[in-house]
Length: 136
Image 1 (cartoon, one colour):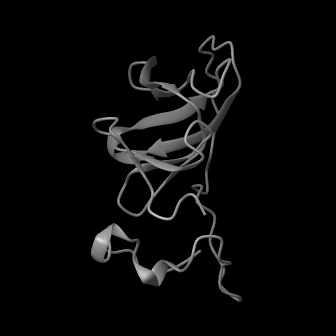
Image 2 (tube, one colour):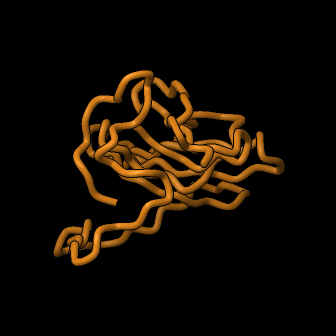
């Protein structure tokens, strides 16, 4: 979906220029590859016992965030990997989320199994909040 990012509207609603949840991308709009022209892949093993998904790179922190599933919808986590020191650290624990992305404000956004809505996480603090209209 494309649109103009901006501050939330009155009452905390998302900007109207982004369109309704579940909308389609405009016809004829071509989006370029988000990957650089020269890419390399490095296998990193962290010993995680559960399913991993939703990796997203946060350039400002030079860190990779990803979700680890849990035994129930409330026992998963978001992990943070920093290649500079080759360390994995728990970012948020005891959540049921998957499919990470970044929103225009630089927040991590995830599909929440535990709350059945879209959820934002502040990459600096881990503070969690619901995305307005995210349960549609």
